Image (cartoon, rainbow, N blue to C red):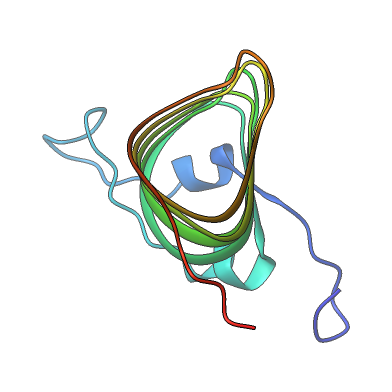
Length: 127
């Protein structure tokens, strides 16, 4: 709850309604949606290509694919992430999760079967 309003997750379907049209349609959707920041949590169960600033958290379901970049506090990956991921607090890669790209994290937990590859580094957390 923030400012007396109930927070609810933003789904990939919500972003599809603001995807650009034109010759890049279907290949690329560079989106920046401040409502995702205000709501705090992004849930991806389909395919989403985006660049997002500071969400509170992301949850990628087993059938979910996120391509792009995102900076946030917490992440739980059951599906696939490709791109640049900065997780200031904790990233949890479940047994079905695959993370590929540039990954920065405060804490990391990987279940047996989970995969991570690319440029992976821990970031200093402010005390």
